[in-house]
Image (tube, rainbow over all chains, first blue to last red; front, side, top):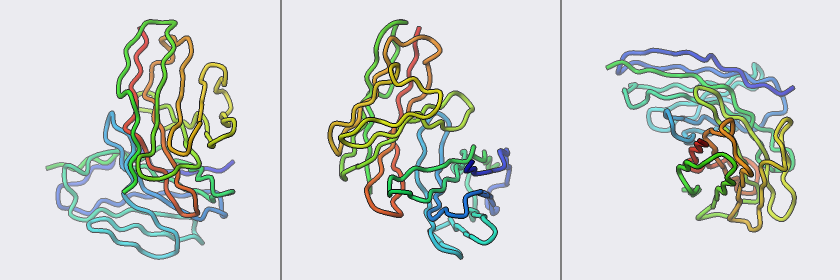
Length: 113
Length: 116
């Protein structure tokens, strides 16, 4: 069974620090990897996508992918209280290009002022 | 960016009522739409995958006669919760996938359903 594992947290970091969120996946055929942010009571919002090994940076966010280790991470630099949310890792192998995502259960991040 | 509109955002109704939720992709054609349910402090649970012009594929344990899905066009999918009961109260979220590899899902704002 295809699985995506995340530490549920809560992960607590002080404002201005780097928050590091980790995710492992079981399906070696996974090709696309996404990080979604979900505020309490709201729907998920896509914040990062990564498809090849290495780092991808977008503003304060950096996604890291290591397919050999089946590991994907999200770094948030200069964390702000507004970053406090649950972060969902999602992967897919896009069989048939249908876009089926497998979600982790999410890591709750709390940024303390 | 890709925009997905979900309506209504909140429904409160009596037990036994059927509720229809609409999901529209506003600026792209979505060959596939997904319906999720999320209970408080739980993760997203995929209910069904909806492909335009064909029958939806339901996840194990989801009653297809209870949760009717119609995907009549490339921009609209609907979920009807038939004869809703209090245990159906949840946060229902749709997402749409633009055809092509490496495209993410884009989520609607969700519908909070409360059955009295």
